[in-house]
Length: 360
Image 1 (cartoon, helix red, strand yellow):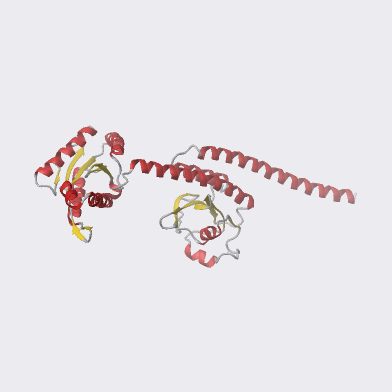
Image 2: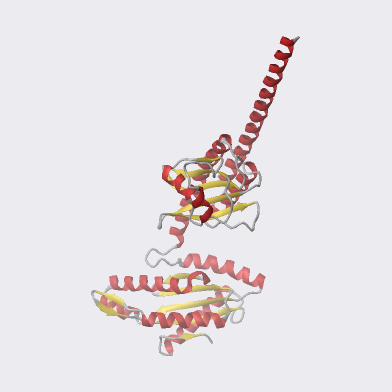
């Protein structure tokens, strides 16, 4: 009887282990079914924001179970630094202080390998005191995986939690598989964005092309009419550009166009878009901008161009610009009419002596 009881106890332990293993296998099957869905979904997206949104939603639900924080960092190729691109947080009030990554992210970058930290306090690889000082939120455990495409680091996916021993090797393995597919999807969207930018950007000035202006103007007109907002447009022309070209040569003329294009983009920034309309003429689209604010921007452009020194073969040269301004719906209710009004006022600015803005 005693031997039978011992055998029964061993069998119960064995059954519990097998049951636990069976549950783990079922969970893995469900995870990889979900993984198949996310892979198919990621490949349908053509822009990076959509890819990242779906990716973080998937990871935050499947692995993090909507607990803790899920962070995605991308690499700024110019600065060669990480920057926080998107997050999912259990508590939206949680602050992520490390916008360029922390000690854990630097470890992943340095080793280009996945990282599992079961207990941040006792992990000998990291100085927990330094972590507590640098972070505004508690970090007890985490998993992180690099986004690698052809051995090139694109970024990092990371999940952390204030509690310890939340994640295990299986979670890390699943995150690593997701990261591999995500890296390909993000790289593809990046290549598509670059190809699109080449198609809509003027190679000399860095401004958008005239064809793209027509597309954007139609979209902005429809949006502004629907939202009852203002839409202003500036037609900018470099004064006496033909004389400048004849005097200094076409290479010098190209340099001036490039310098003026960069200056216009610097002044306008995120308030609008700068297009090369043709030859020495530029067009600036200013959504949600009334005539008063558009006039302020136009006068700033005239003054800034007048003061700008352009060096040609060690000689100081300068140019001026004339600007025509029109605003919808005050001046026009159709996009063609808006361009015509701005172009007519540019002609007036030329007739009145150049180096000025005409807006009525």
